[in-house]
Image (cartoon, rainbow, N blue to C red):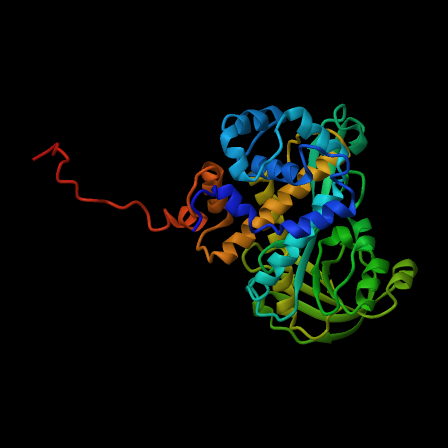
Length: 388
C-alpha cells in the first residue's frame, strides 16, 4: 500500500536512487555539501518541471507553502532560490546527463517491441536539432547571431516509444552536421536525417560501421547513373537508381555506390529525392521510412510546449544544461511510468494530472486512472427537481 506517500515520492521511486548516487560520486557532486544534496536538487528541479514553475522565486514560494510535506516528498534540504541557483551553477551538469542516460536505457528496454508505423525489425533513429532563442545580454556564452543568443538541442530519437537516446546541447553557432562526429553508430540500425546532415565523408563512416542512412539530396547534385530498377509509378515512385558521385571532393568522401530514389507524395504533390546506402529494402519502404522522421519534429514541439526548456532558471551554461537534462529525465520518467502501470493515456494527460496532484497521498495508479472512464453519475433522491 502507498498510505502516507505522496504521488511525487511514488513517482520518484521509479528513478533508481543507487544509479543516481553513482553519477554523483563520479563527478563529486556532494563534495562539502551539508544540507541541499544533488538528490534534493534533482527532486526540486523535477517538481518545477512537473508543475510548470516559471522562476526560482516561484519554485521557492510553491514548495515553502507546504513545507510540512517536503519530507514526505523526499526533499530533505531547505529549499531557497539562492541555494538552488548556486547548485545549478556549480554542480556538474554531467551528473544529470548521466542519470538521464540511465533512465533512457530503462525506457528503451520497455518500448523495445513497440511499433512505430512500419513493420521493420531494425532499430530506427531520427536525427535532428531544434533552436531555442535566448537574450544575448543574459546568455553571452551562447552567441548565435550578432544581436541574438541561442542554444541547439541535437537529438537522436529512437522511434520506438519516441525516446531520445542522445541529446547534445551546444551554442547556436554549431552546425548540425558536426554532431555526426560525436555519435557512435549502431550496426544494422537506420538513421533518418534531413539534407542539413548531407556530408558524404561523414555518411561514408556510417556506411563503414554497418549502419544505414536515409537522407535527402540537394537540388544541384552531380552524379552518374549506373543502373535502374523498375518502379510502380502509381505509388508515387518515379525512379530507383544506383549511382556514383562525379564531383571530385564528394567522390573522395564517398567512393562507393549510392541508391537514389525519387518520390512524389500523392497527397501534397511534393517531390523528394532520397539517398541511402541500403539496397535491400523496397523503394517505397525507404520513402515511408523518411516520412517517420517527422516524429522527431513532433518530439521537439511537444517538449517545448509541455516542459520548461524555453525559459531558464539560471543564466550560466552549467545551469542551462542541468535544466535541459532534468526536463529530459522527467519526460523519460513519465514514459517509464506509462509503460510500467500499463496506462491507456497520452503523456500529455499524465503530465496534466501529475501537475495538480503531486502532493496528494493516494496510490499513483489510482490517481492516473481515476478519470479514464469519465465522471460517475449517481441517482441522488434528495436532489430537488427543478422542472416537473
